[in-house]
Length: 382
Image (cartoon, rainbow, N blue to C red; front, side, top):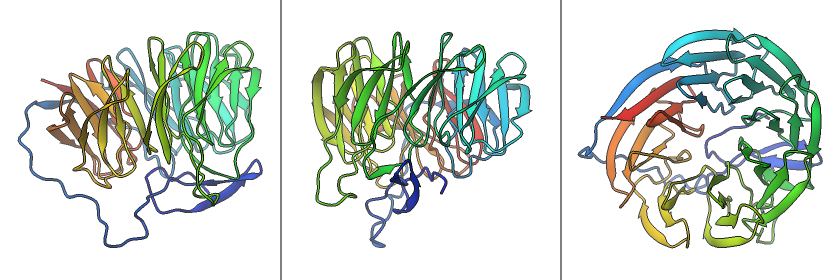
């Protein structure tokens, strides 16, 4: 079964590596009386403008996160197309020759995507020429982390692979035991200096050495609780975020937790459930929880600063912060801009009406969004 990105009703997926995986869960799916919030009219306090719009092709049942390097944007689609936009103008488009299921990762030199059959395909960022292919153990659901020294890919069976960016030769594999049930997810690994950080089933955040793939430290974001395997699902399904010496992650049916990046010591933790993720700025952590509320927490202590709960069950994306605004997309393709100081609504922008599931990216001083329908939207504030 393919990964269905929005918070849909519970469905069992095929066994992966001896364990079963679950699609993301809507905790209210069993009640027909519970409906998503309708949007109230707001008076915008800022003017959000569209810098440009493009088309990437449909994501279908997968998640395609755009990659941004300076003013270049790289996008992919399930139909196999990979496209580069420069300042909104299409620079090139190529076909991988087969369906894609994960991407895009890029450092401005290499563009990396993945397939449902576990193939990793690398293109030259300059002209789109295919450079190499590599093979992993399972389907590729997440965008790769790409640097000058290594390409790190996460597979659907929760392994990390390190490849040489020059020729695609495998350098190492990191794997761990998985619980009986887990959530399938498109959470990308994140590179910081000597480490790659990734969240895993069972609520574990792991720092892995880029040199040899060995675990350097492991932090507990969530402890599985409950009597059934379903109750005990407590997975990290979104990318960790870091700034300075601090790295933070959030788990479904778990907690938000921040750790010392160098040694994994826990700084603070707070009970909260999220499958979409969190963002960080110099002051706060912003979390979109599973019920559709957006929370602001003090990044150094974890104390609650505000909560915006008027987006109930709108299946929010990971937040992204710019201009003192917290931007989140929803299942109807609406981008909501919240004031960073108090969580009030500052503006809205309507895309193509399809879900915003992929993590928004920073673009210049603003934001870049890619929808499930294949729309690419570069937004900023005037």
